Image (cartoon, rainbow, N blue to C red; front, side, top):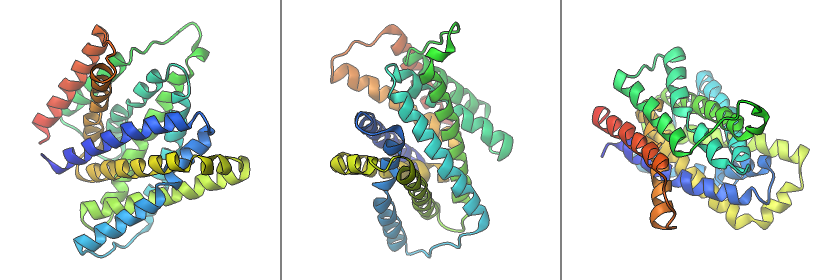
Length: 296
């Protein structure tokens, strides 16, 4: 198994668990506070991971420069926006639509990378990205009410989250690649600094706008730490995979999250899977198969 494939699968598993935790804790906290939890409670583990990586790899910490600073700041802000709008989408009754549209990040990352960072894919690569995105939308049974778009908040939130996640991924990869170090070491230090910036920004907002949320977080500390740990482990997977492979390719492989969700739904909860959901899952499987064949 290719290293980037391993890290992507790790990220998918952790992201699924973390998203479930965020959805649950969002019932007690505001969307902004739920976003903060991911970064604040994950920060200590991010720096512990950095220490472990540099200790065992016996490499020196690379010199940080202005280009790296620019990309990390942009990535930090974009991921805050993405997480905030994803939480908003998940808080709405038809949250599956919002979370599915957030998966458009693979296509958006491919477009952004090709237009601004000269990261073109092969024809098969673009085809797999498009097929995977369509599969995610079909599997989620998304619908748009053209007569009243105000009713489709989850769609708007999901698309904004998808665009912001796409930008985050591309900028994280650029930040990591700009450092003169081993890929995994660069990914580790990039992760820690991005999470540090996000924690500072979100904490400042919460202190000024809704300070009472800190008391609510303290009451849910065990759940918050769970979200923090799973978030960092998932981010380690994403950051590492994206330092080794094109962002769009990594994110398309990440669509297997939908397959896992529906397998659990069917085999563990004994819930019926519709023909439309099965077709969507099949499309995702085809996109993943194409990636594994042509990018391994």
